[in-house]
Image (cartoon, rainbow, N blue to C red; front, side, top):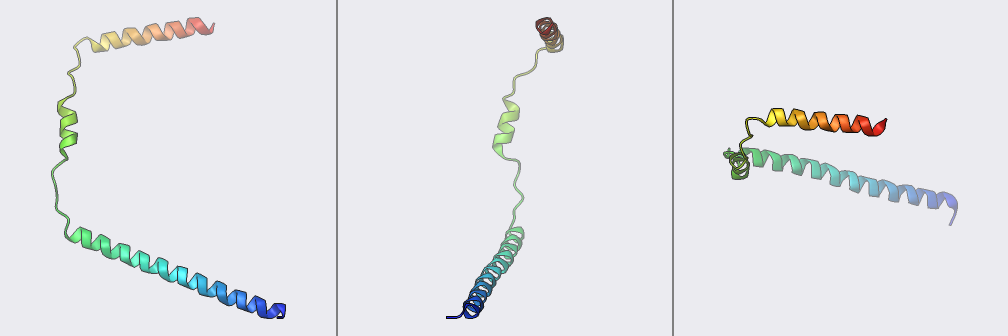
Length: 86
């Protein structure tokens, strides 16, 4: 078999394979668009999930002096860091 015949057969096979993949991807895009339209049509607005509400209600209240304590801790950490590097 001559090389030119093999090249032509290879190009035909490549074109056929690429055409099939392209067709599949186009079909996939339109299917996804149809599913999105279908889901949007039947979408029901639900209230916020209960897990988000549960997390918000179980947070402990911050103590009144937390800012003063936080400033003290940060100041101590900075002074210790500066002392360790020099």
